[in-house]
Image (tube, rainbow, N blue to C red; front, side, top):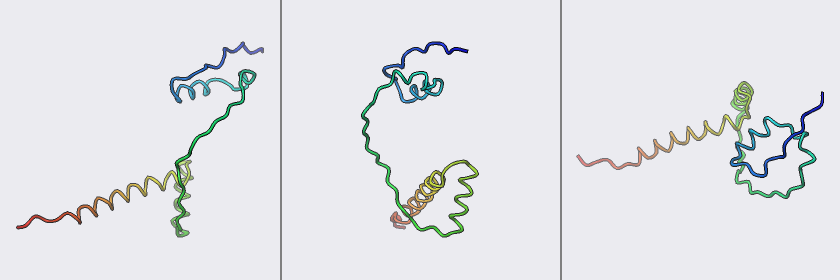
Length: 101
């Protein structure tokens, strides 16, 4: 069965989500002859920090991540943020001067 002729690739998308929706429903192979080389540059601001983790918690973290279908970093980062926020709040509460009686 012959494929229907495709319309052109939109020149601009309003949002990244709109571009994503377009390419989620269109096959790049149908548009390949309309593409052209592009020069792209960007600055990644994400940094990695390495910490030693004991074997047992590392195995458990990997198991939880695998069960959820995500990376260990995806699990560990929110857990660390949550715990650090808790610790930060506790530290602020301890540092508050008490009112004189």
